[in-house]
Image: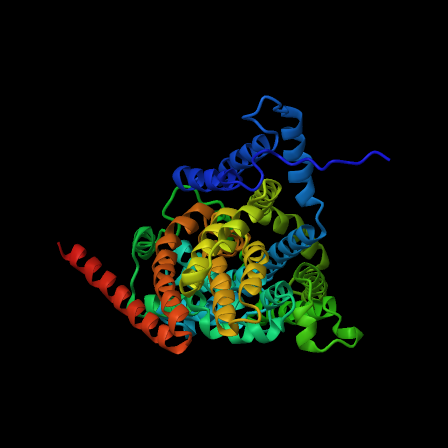
Length: 517
């Protein structure tokens, strides 16, 4: 019997594996054009896979890898397709809520009860923290609910996107009942994964500082970097700043005077309940599995897809009974909702394809080799090193969960049976770094969802939130160095909070000085 030899490119498990996503990210930040930047990164990954710098270079292998293993492969994945279905259904439901008058009615109600820009932003943060089940669900739901409110108070779409993004993954990664807790638990082999996740929460400095930073930034009215320009323009009535505003016409679908606040709240509450039921169903809850274990073993894609579908069906019936939207009008929202989500779907597809390129080039093995080499006297600063590696890896690949899968097993193997506390700190550093890199990466699915939820130009969102992320990341890095040596969660947390408030107060003072010049 002839043995099948698996093809391995010559650049496998080398630094070259990270070049395609880095090129895509740099191009996207420079050109502000995300589609072509991602595609160029994909093409480079395909050429590397075909050994472009070698005499045996195969163009056929490169092209087939890009389309068959890449684009077609990611669109054939049941998990990815489930997420896309969820995305489309959310788009349809938002369109229905607009047509039924629910969004306009909620906007008017909120306008009477939420009087200030600070109040509008704090309400967005509160709702984001409240929806901790899943980051995709968080981004799109918070965006659709709070957009009318923040628009009324002239909060820029870039600022709204930041508030949505910063309450998505950072909240999910410290919520025991969430799809993220399930993902992390699954990567901790040979240990009680759920117990470790709970113990790691106080050490998850990036998530905790991000939530604190949002509140402080809103209360102190500190806006810096390009976000300052977006907020200044928003106060003058321009919510977008840049000429490219892909969702600007979406407000034309909002119908006033037709529905009531109930016509927005009922679909949202139904969606939350149905998605929770969908997630615990996918985890085996209705087969006798406990609710915590059901969340731990849930499939976010299946749960959200099923939950959103049933929520859509219930909403169509609800609107028909209330006679605010006929069945025919509801059906007319299906292509409109799909159209609204096309930019997000396209960026997600390219981002997933780029990840497939890095996987086939051995990015996981390359990084595992780097981190696995840290030992001896360096173990004290390992949490800080893991944090930085996780930030870089998640930023380059656009995936937090992929970063968990690479680094958490390495950390467990390093400390299992020797130093349990250091293992927890390092796992937490991995989770925090992965969320941080994912938070600021233009090819991250969560970042893409936040742009879609806020209906903001994607590269505007990335470039405006990057300085905010870097400030919190730098403070988190310092606290992980301290935590690695004192092995106590409270002292680094207090020091980090003091530094955070000091830095933001300093930035406000500097900005005030510049404005007075």
